[in-house]
Image 1 (cartoon, rainbow, N blue to C red):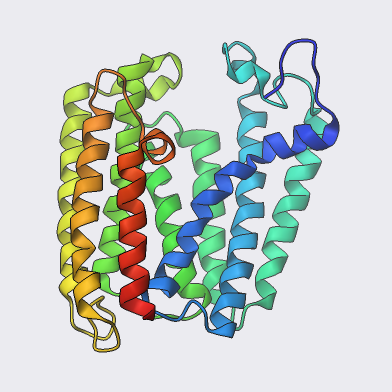
Image 2: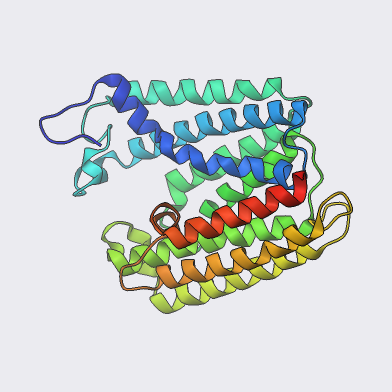
Length: 300
């Protein structure tokens, strides 16, 4: 973000418009191969890296298109007016060209994946859904929640598809409702923190509705995760090839972290899930405990 009288150069402006820190979301591509215990197999690792790079570049292309679409409204916003395109640091022509190039490169990378047709389907679905969100459905109440959540789902499932890894039905349910839980948590925090001034669709929600949606999604996500953790089938976390005890213990940090996120989203300060992951040491420790137990159960 620039400041008045301190314009960025084209490279810095483009990097800002690409929202590179948001690439952390594409870490979800690692979850399926990681949970399957095959992440460090050479082919799986190469496929996952290619999938991460492709999703990152395509996502950046979509971020730029979103800022081009919202450029006029962003210029009226107290903070968004400092975004690269709204501030004029990156011209609209340069931004459109960069978006096209990023999408082209991102769609080329998956040819390095063995049998990439399935992953291409995931990537194209992501582009279609994101474009629909940008152009038409950003302010469509409830629908916008599903579209944003589906972006997380496609990333998580894309990691499995890229390496042709069979995944548990419980895993897919966890990802679906876990993603919805995070999106609703963010909306709840935004509504409590700044109201509808930052996002017009928030005027269509009430705190009571978002509380109910948060509770529903959390309940399904926790239940599905617990069933995945105790599942002894070939795709379950407690399969014969894994160490059962640490994987079943992962249920504890998952439940506690979700309770912390619910508490934060419904607090007067309106803490979003991202804020908690970046700033709350307890949630960070729970995430590390979960990761340690997962690694220990699947790789040791």
